[in-house]
Length: 284
Image 1 (cartoon, rainbow, N blue to C red):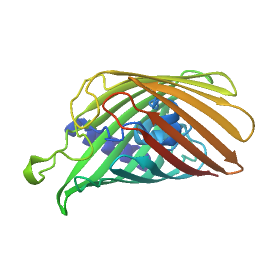
Image 2 (image 1 turned 135 degrees about the vertical axis):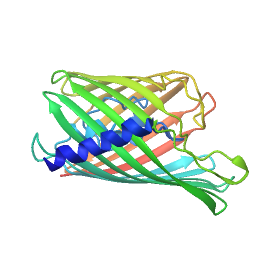
Image 3 (image 1 turned 90 degrees about the vertical axis):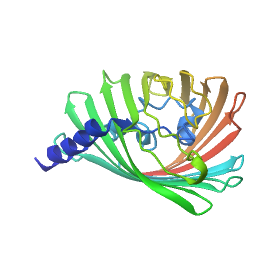
């Protein structure tokens, strides 16, 4: 009963606020970036849950993950996530995430602390929500805000999954010096996606990102078609490639026991800059 009440509270807040969030680094973490940032229906990664909280409900392992931008023009990124999966169909999966992004040239910085929950509501159907505490600063002066995300996942069968995410549902706002916009866009952003496993070693993903065509600090306000391919080469190595709007991506994963190291590279051709991300994940 307590889990149902907690989930109801999250959804009630979302319904009142009507908001969710997309990020300046709207490309996910290293694994997602390598797959063209088609992350809305990935059902096995704690980092993808930052962009669709319902994904938490599909996880079966406790995961701890740390991401850093190995190279990003005039910007730094750090993210630390921990997820505890549900112990049964009547229980909640939950996650706690710390996110920090900075721009050195403009002295902008934003910090998010996010609590996410998800629950299975039926066979293969998962609902999740996130509540974010946000702090944006420019040269040491800033403001605080709250943001709400909501997401859905439908595991059609063992091969196919469908996802929907509505980020920044409440359109949170900051009052910053000079009217400068924050690092992270705070407009509502709707995305849908699917993932498909033709065999146990191959994963395909497709997203339609930013259907609402919201303008903000995202590099483009256009609807983006994103796709990605992940192929397990052997028990240790996984290769990835993808496409974001006008940009190609590549990635590599190295798994040894409980540890996975992922690298993702965005090869920029539009308004973006080249981006290199590294993620270290422990699954146990």
